[in-house]
Length: 495
Ligand code: ADP
Ligand code: MG
Image 1 (cartoon, rainbow, N blue to C red):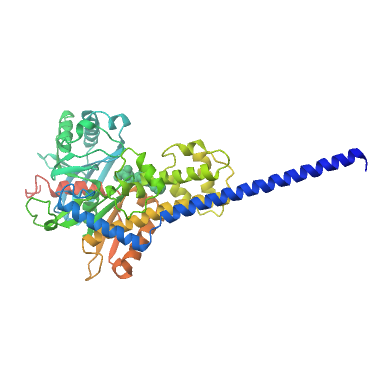
Image 2 (image 1 turned 180 degrees about the horizontal axis):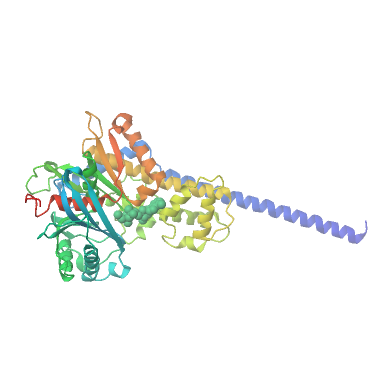
């Protein structure tokens, strides 16, 4: 071999050695990155664990807090607000009624013509978006906007919808923010949530604000019921099934209402209602207990939120936050285990950039190579060329987060059942929980697990007496029904 050839061969050999070393080092780096990722995953999974014993502690804590909140105002993180709804729809309601639903970025107006005992219900609805500047402006501006939309809707009334001559139109107002009721048709705002912030409204009577705005719009309408969406859903649920005794909302936020014995409400200083019952708006999103499995991700999410220290239960189970928890875990995996390569995708650092519907779409991906996960990661985070292993890890995280939320939601429902004495079966009593909200409706991995956990906690026998029913948009019709059952014309002759 000539010198030059020897030299070339040596260089080639050296290069081959270097390349091999690089590959080995890269593999080692990859494998240590991956084991770091696995360690983060495992730790998160352990912290989110909800074994059955823990779930029962959460259910017990919920029942204890319910007692405390009913005993006195401020007695618990649960406000346990008295709704003044002491008689739920009977099914005999009759006539034309309106409902207005305000509780998020959308608001809905609805009219129903109730047919009496045939339960023949005709309804029409209109939906509008609240312009964001009105959510943080003045109260007149917000209420004038709402009243104007309502007036526009009323002016389109015709045909099937008939108001007897000489009568005033009546409205049920679903206002899904914490309100201290002073009667069924009056109540003052305690605080805004869900991105609204109009300071001058705090402590004001919500119904008189709306009534004044309707007058300014030339609309002659009386508000006969002011309810929260959970109370509306309970009323709407009761109309279709007489065994409905509680309602749960799992949407952007979360809350529940249930039927309580009036004598079991020490802070109720009014007359005992004829029915002996009162609907309580729990405001359960603010529940907190040392038994809740909270992770570092939850704590930092809370600390950086608009309402630190508040709505802790809501922050681990509701639609506004599940995607955000996932984002936080993925960010850590990207930073500490280079899950998406050497650069952290910039979008991953933006709070709320990963919404719950995206998370549920990835979680529900049933394609063998997880194409939905791949495309969402690309679309939302700009990450390309993810390995199947990485995509499986993302699904596993969705699973952990949704499972914790669903199981805790079930435990909270069991807490209500316990408070109502319906967690053990003594006789053949049916218990129906009316459920609504986009999270419950669209995230089937969540809703199925919630129902499965109810059975796991209660056992087959008791669980067979408990039914969870979907009451999609039940709060609007519920508010209209409550307007009907509290009409100023009740007892007057029907035309
Ligand atoms: P709101 O709670 O604002 O009154 P909804 O009951 O319609 O309204 O719930 C909307 C919420 O439901 C969204 O903010 C989102 O968190 C959740 N959601 C909507 N669609 C889905 C979906 N496909 N998968 C999971 N969650 C969803
Ligand atoms: Mg809603």
